[in-house]
Image 1 (spheres, rainbow, N blue to C red):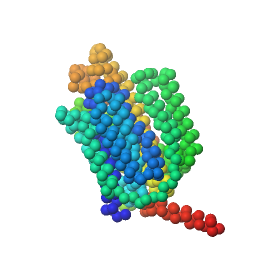
Image 2 (cartoon, rainbow, N blue to C red):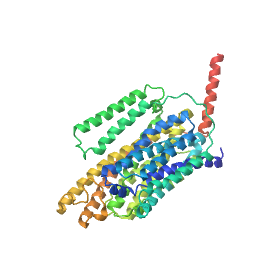
Image 3 (cartoon, rainbow, N blue to C red):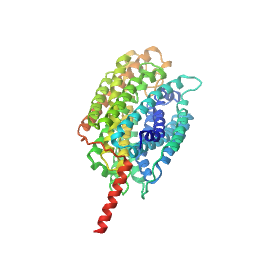
Image 4 (cartoon, one colour):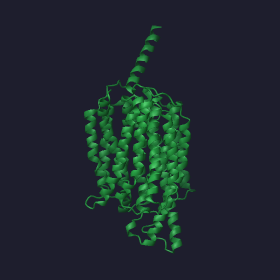
Length: 520
């Protein structure tokens, strides 16, 4: 395919990915307002984010399996359709329970976009040229991430619109993506094989992860860390995941094919993706809350404050992608990205309520540069080292574990944040001689800063500043482990044929082998 044909085919994919990114980022600056308006708790704040991540994570392997059965373009359009339904539900939510449910529906749609977009890219673009187009996707990611918080902040600050339009705004973009996919994406017909979807294995994986996430979210709040509830939830989670591994190892078509981990590159990139998910998503998802609660900024200003990190990601992903496509050398960028990401998280662990915006911008830019060099190139390394027939499995496995890392990181660090904020506020209130309950809604609720008296406001700002810095300190070792993992990935030359071309070659080779066997 020519560059023009590839760009035309990618237009719908990029529009779809933009919608998925927009849904996650447009609510970032609106969440403190949403949670306060719905009178929900800090745990609910975490679950509004976690619900989408969990649904996306759980459904990525299933979307990958469905792509073996049905038309990939139709599946992409179906995932966008589910996204529209989830957005409308979220926009009309009048309680936090319906909002979380709507985020689950959005997450299912995002799971299809996450899995299928990268599978289609690998099918039509050779790995040697993929870096350049991955850079374009990085640019779309950056634009969506920049535009989302800004648009969300403006919508929240506009009295005649409000936070509900943070969900409605994505609907026209999703409909546009469906139309573009119909018009521009042309995939050759592929002979379909009989595939049995492993619903039992997928259910066991989701149930096991949910049990552990419920535990880390509620422990220390609803019940003690050392309690029978902890034993029940952790025990159930471990048993369910062990049963999932047992089933996956014996079924013909597992939701997560364990055999793919015999490939060293796939195994190492999967581990690195999991750790990047924990460090990146778990650490940064609460930055907007820090900007608004600890630094006292409006949603619009909070969106502007995230620009340094996004610009760093945009520049590094685009430049690294272009250079990799030109030279064919890629490992050095993985290692450099992991080093820079670790440094960025370490620097952000020093922030507090009095950190200057100049210093904060520099720290965020460092983190963005590291993530931009690392995240997409992990997928490139894995796709380059597997047979064409395993491209979908390898891609969905990496997406699954990266999302899993983000889900775990968000949930665990969210629970730590809630407990740390409560502890810091209690100490601050006691030191100031202010009775408990004078903090504007209880220690576990997200406060409305505009209603707090000045002494309490300062205590709350300091509590959120200290707690947010602690999250980055906890995320830093995960980034360091990702660096150690990346170092052991073996660099191999990038292939110059696309996934469809390689698949045709593998089929031809298999046919010749069959003829030889029959002839012999």
